[in-house]
Amino acid sequence: MQHVKIPQDRIGALIGEGGETMREIEARAEVRLDIDSENGSVAIETVGDPVRGLKGPEIVRAIGRGFAPGDAMDLLEDDMMMFDVVDIDAAARNKNDLQRQKGRLIGEDGRTRELMEELTGASVVIYGTTLGVIGTPQQVEAVRSAAEMILDGAPHGAVYAFLEERHNEMKHQGLEYHRFPGGKS
Image 1 (cartoon, rainbow, N blue to C red):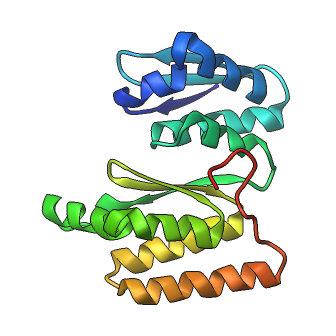
Image 2 (image 1 turned 135 degrees about the horizontal axis):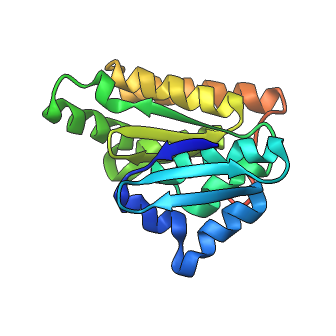
Image 3 (image 1 turned 90 degrees about the vertical axis):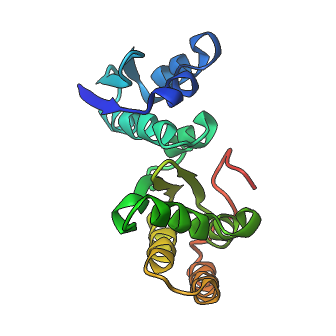
């Protein structure tokens, strides 16, 4: 049994209309979810395949960090898919700096976040004080590196050049995904 705490404003997304999302997670990840909607605590018990069951907590965490349930469920599509979080707050000096850092990661009209997705094939969500990413290890590493560059103050042009370079490397190595199954394109 594992326990995951998610923000209260994400409980509805986890449960879904009439419990539909919760039931789909339970069926596909072979787990049982016990959701405490008062405090956002979710107990996850594996009831089937233990390997699939390991993805259950990751799916719950991803939904808690702002991913749409369908994107979070993509963690089950491929054993290589993983979920990672970059803590924006840890790189911020104060509340104003946190907002500035989030703005830099999102970019004008969302362009920086979109480029992270387009050039890596990963799915990227900025929610609260975190940047979440779902993808293969190579995709996740590329997004994490780009985010850390931005948080360290690198110019956007340098980050975009880095992402282009990583995109070309992944393409050359045959690791390029245009988008994982069911994900946004």
